[in-house]
Image (cartoon, rainbow, N blue to C red; front, side, top):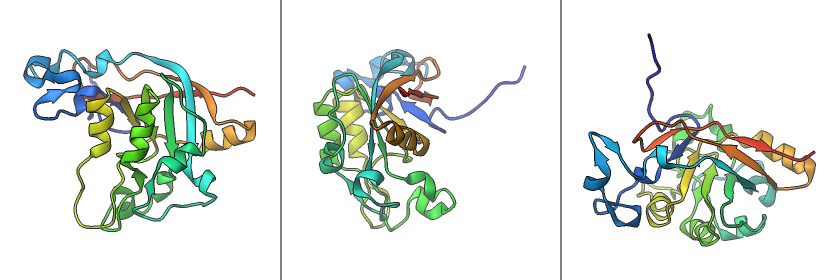
Length: 214
């Protein structure tokens, strides 16, 4: 019988808390050596992520800024998020920055010397302070990278995953959701999603649904 083989971090996927360790420790001070066994995480893995059935909120940066495209290296900050709904504890916060329109511009899509637009540290701290359960975006890694050579350290991953235990959802398709919510005159919806239950993995594909009241 044939099966599928793929990385846990491919397509639209969710990062488990075990995706980031700092000084050989996971979120909550759990040593990696104790959490991992035979190459799998016995704690903090994707199979420990609960199914998400909760309020979702969309922060459409393009719509709030009244632009069709962000310049490379643009930082999305607190002001961009504060223009949207106030997040509540347990919410899933989704941030649309228009990354999908770069799909046919390979260098821009993966990021080059011109930088990558994404959430800055202040915006991530603002979301964490509101106690959200997960943060998603339409970008590959969500991290803001200013213009310049080489990749930058991932402070947003460290802050949300390691320090606060907040899961991350990446490469979301948010254009249709944006139009639907705008037509309904809201930025809120019911979020439904669960990652594949891959035992001990640091991430897995997720196919979330947004339920919007007519």
